[in-house]
Amino acid sequence: MISDPCASSLVAVDGAAVERGGNVLLRPCSAVLGTGEALVITGGNGAGKTTLLTLLCGLSIPTAGTVLIDGSAPDERSPVFRSTVAGMLGLPPLARDLTIEEQLRLVTVSWGAPDRGPTGSHAIAQGLLTRLQIAHLADCFPHELSSGQLQLTGLALTLARPSSLLVLDEPEQRLDAERRGVVARLLAELREQGRGLVVSTHSPQIVDALATQVLDLDAARP
Image 1: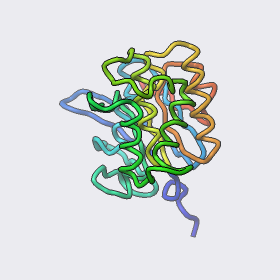
Image 2 (image 1 turned 120 degrees about the vertical axis):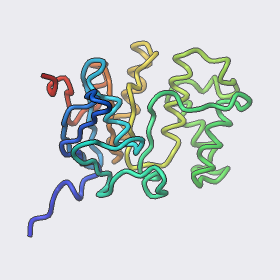
Image 3 (image 1 turned 90 degrees about the vertical axis):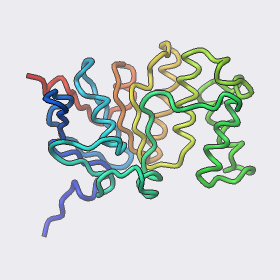
Image 4 (image 1 turned 180 degrees about the vertical axis):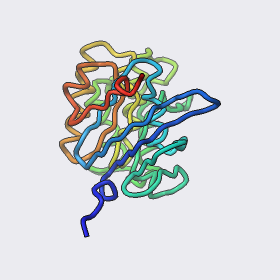
């Protein structure tokens, strides 16, 4: 018997579509993604990029077709699913009275990292802040940051979680070309280390740096 490659894939989308109240939010689309691969989703505003990402993150369900993550339907209440997928769909909530480093350390400790040592919360936080070139903001509070700095902070908080799959909605938002390059290089390194990525973007820079395959949702439009 030949095994179904979709069942053993990190991500398997088969004819997934979403319609609400007679409005088509996502036309049928399909994709299969393995570990260490990056699916970049492109398309104009309203093509359904964010809608597809919400399906992958278990925030909504398709009205047609199927979505599987590591062989199972997404379920945000499942500890296994939550330890597999780390998603950034908009800026994550930030505590006003915690510094950026404290917020990062809170996330890492919540997911089981020790406080100290080479794999501890302090090392993880400092490493991410350094790689994203915002280490000088470690002691700042969220309300002291610019929109671009907040975007990088949100990305750091997402990357601080252990995961096999990163789902990112337009990570280049609010960033200039130099910072987009910083993000693209870091995400490419994570892909090379074995993480799967699904990224929606309007940036050719992100596409060129990351994509092992591209899903153009505009192609599904009539």
